[in-house]
Image (tube, rainbow, N blue to C red; front, top):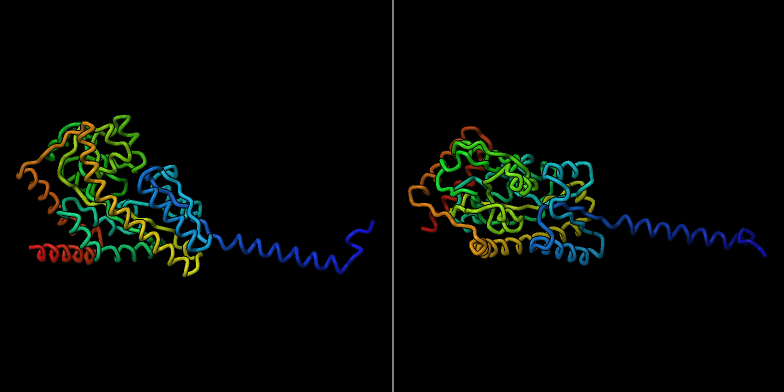
Length: 343
């Protein structure tokens, strides 16, 4: 029986075919880019469903060239850990709160200045000025923002009623790690807060290391913090914002057309998430009451005291130049215009 080596012409055709197949397989593999994304959003929530739906649409529209792999529930660690893993390529992006990315652009903390906004409508109007500024700032820091959504307002949750700053004197109050604005606000109220990452809060509540936290009503339920709380102060503290930021180097591996698909689909997903958030915070408030959380009301004097703290905080931030003062001024000017138009 003759071997193939005795048929040189056949071998040449086989070799060419083999090389062609190898080249095709290599090109096919190289054309697909997987983006590994971490988030503290628990699996099964509406937030995760929207992100997964967006990933499906992106895969279809890019014909499989762009894939998303999510790591939900905080399994990849704190925001600082996620950012470190992004730097070394182990992850390619994450869903963050504004304060969690403030190390890359301090202006992100402007959104969460306590007692600044009176309503979601005010916050959304101001965001038209502020969102492009912080998106550009994060781009300079090597991050590409593909989605932004408002999460509504956070409230104080506690195990003792909180109506005034004095009620926090002996409390173990949480502030988000790296959130210099929240930290300063509580210190001005005479409190020494406990800075922790979002992922570590539930454990701290279990062990008693914390007994007072801030979160939206929907967030308190989603993260199960409400199971460790007895009271909610029925007065909004600060506006919260969520962003999806991708490592710029990884994102730029996509073609311009595929980048546009990712931007469009994630923007759509985060718009839907924002709409869901606005509804959920109302529904969750009722759910919390039904589950035994007692609402703590404030009188006019107590409200004015908290609002006065917010005004002093803004002046302190200006004096210390914690942010780009031009951006802070632009935000305050927009807010003044919005309030003047509403009169």
